[in-house]
Image 1: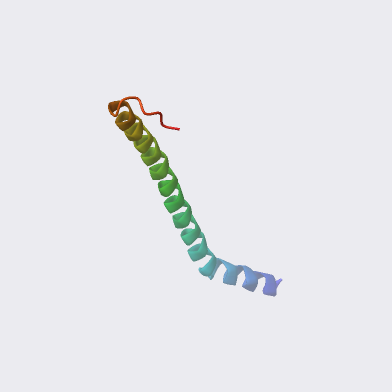
Image 2: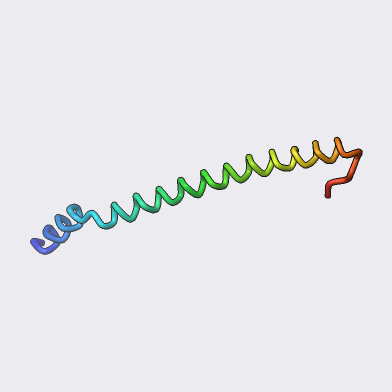
Length: 62
């Protein structure tokens, strides 16, 4: 029982897992930001090319 108590105390004091979780959350947040920016930028670029094509006299954009 004493060994279990010591193991639990060591587990609670251990901070390596917390650091890994923080890095994982940070990476996920950066990924979401990149996906959001790419989605917004993609829509704007598509509308820009469509606008340019319309100004050029109806050139079809695939």
